[in-house]
Length: 572
Image (cartoon, rainbow, N blue to C red):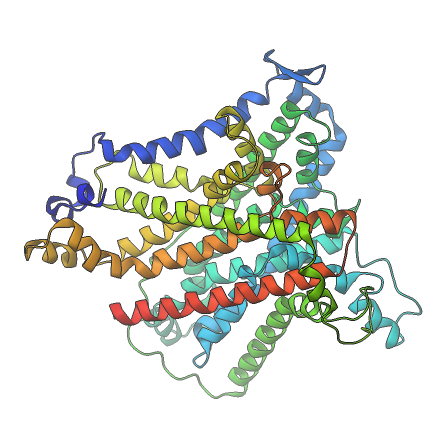
């Protein structure tokens, strides 16, 4: 494959002048796009027009499912609640993450990398763990109630903090902050200092500079971050099930039940289609309200030292306080879960009974957990290996190959990343059923690869587009064949992106619940085992499981950071 891709003509010829025609090397890209992305979505659309008779789907095309939705006041109320929760969570997160990104990107000089890492690390730690930990904070015997009762604010624990709409919005905000922060941080770092200085020299106030310079150049990045956070939370049925109770039920729970206990796939498919259309419309509106204006080229030279005025000192103090409180907010559930893994009592309440390793010792004797953990490792290995090799190959094909519609292929292959989790799970069920892939490890591997492979591909593509093409051309001109040029020139330059994508894919696979829940069948992975434990009979060993997963994720972050640092040093 590499031998066919890396030709001297491909490197030297501008991309726009290359002939675009079908080649055998492009077949894997189109096969994946057709079988894993387009076909399952078409099956979802087609299923929504079928009927259920005597418990079986029948080919009687009609609009009955959509008519049922149109006439259902309960459906529209549930849809409105779902969109409201996600929009509120993303909006509140934007109010926190946007100014924090501005402060870190423009005002922090020392320890900036540490601050960015602290905000991003929770993304690598199990979402299931972080969501469940909020029950330890908001529950009747949780941290918040214990504090309020001990301080005299409440006479007895309140039931108003957990299993409410507010608790779902709070956790959605918690989930969304890192995504919006990282999306906007890069835009703030690339703000040309000359524009800010020109605005100041023209007599504009700080507010006018922000409204007419900073905001137009960063609002598109904010829109991307808000859209991503919205799409992640709108398809999340795990958080509402664990945190919201009846008042927090969302449409994701309804969709999963139609493909589960209700066994009404056509109706569930129609609900999923309506949800997708609404999500597309909302994302389109958000992007339209924040159009791109201007080009971020980066700073020219060093930034001037910040003025040591009372106002500047106040702003720095407020920014430092805000970042500190946000980091504490992000880490409180994680630290609390780790603390409870050493609690001697089986009761999840404050104060803790004492220190004990009891729950870690019980893990070794829990056969169901060990089997699920082994299966998770197997699935993660298969997903990461396949996605890394194929995703890197796809990136090389799209960047160097003469493939017609390369941008369309890139966008379409990446579509599962932007698909709400519950909808993606259903889409993969339909696709794997049609392809006759049995439920279990193989089906789970295919389903998880649908969103892990695009992550690897996009990271490698991003790196390839930043490379100087003359390096590869020089290697070929000096007599190296195409294989040696790839091994000794190109691969060392993209190795950091490949390894980073593999490690990120590992965490995505190990933590996935929403897609795997539809595909695993009786062969549960560790996240599904834990999720079922928390739904049908919680045991404190779950705390120990989560603590070990957190340690593993932190180890992956450290390894990825060091590999990235070495890669940047090698290419500097």
